[in-house]
Image (cartoon, rainbow, N blue to C red; front, side, top):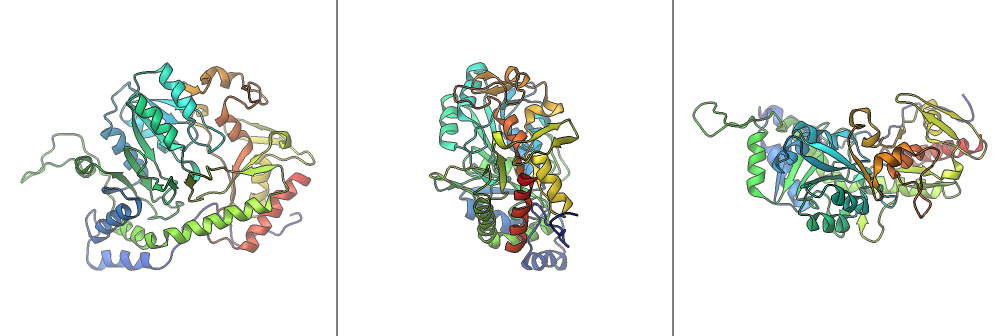
Length: 419
């Protein structure tokens, strides 16, 4: 197979790390017959979330996507209304806007955090001055530049919906993500920093908003002796069984973050002689949760790579590599990596939506982006998201990966630059 031996057991990108308490709380739900969407586990995970994040209210829901949908509904997004959204993210950040009939307008990314660019956001308000809602995500557990983004939004009287699905436990200027927006969401999906196998939460300091979401998420049943419904409802509440898993995971959040940080730092040290950088963060103001360790190949060290909508090809060159080559090498030896999120403005479903860079009309920039083509005064490509997608990848970041296994993965990546 080559110079390495395939791992006997797959090294995952990020899989659940379980501890035992989860099963105890699930069993408790079973033995007490509280198997539905009420029970002690739900009450406790809502309390634990408020305690950790510092918010007033938490509503446990079936997924982070459900929480974002409820956030968009709380913000009052109407059909046809434009909403500014992070471009470099998973589509679950954006889809809830469309559920309510809104029209996402994608805001380009910045190199310093891989998150929404405050300068591009300001430019977007110049082009679309009436926008009332901004939906942002903290990519791979790294907080956005919230001070600058908040200043822009306050200037234009816009509400911030914070997608902290990937960043539970991360903080910006001492404040936990999940409390940095006006309406906030977290996720307990199977690959997150802590998990319930599924589940999510809406977080807020507004008690009335929390009560609305509790009502909407349980089919909007009115207080009446019979089933009375006066507005549209959803089956979005978290089950007491899944809440038992989350409850057992919460005490291990900091432990998981410490392990993820150690993985990130080990990669950073291991790659110090390669023409690559790790996913960046604002070292002065933020502390990520290091959910995924990612790598960006220097532009001059990229071999030729071509991607269609569903396939990718590359031409190997000594001293150079590309995400496709590295990912195929990892897969060959039974380790899982992934491309970084393909920007929303490049997705077929959203290709007709507006896209704004710090220079203005991002669509014109995208159309001219060929081999690093259109560049700004600093020499950087103007379509930052497309450039990051072209050169970036997510490395195996599983908490159960041993140091010895990670050392082998580091050597596998190095070998790609020798071939």
